[in-house]
Length: 63
Image (tube, rainbow, N blue to C red):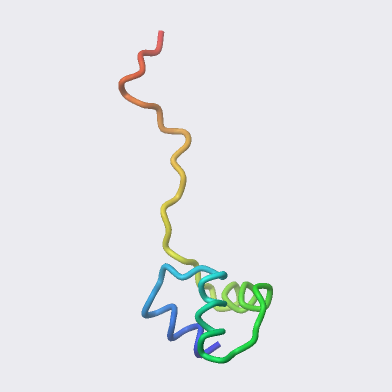
């Protein structure tokens, strides 16, 4: 958990898959489910662009 926290404070955009790859580079052999559980337990949510599906295009004319 300490390694996840240190990596997340430095790179707050790392998700579960990227975090797993990073930890494997450090020598830890963990799976996605465990990392997802630990990140959820610590309350870590990566920063990423959310979809904006309900915003209409201003160029479209609505009658």
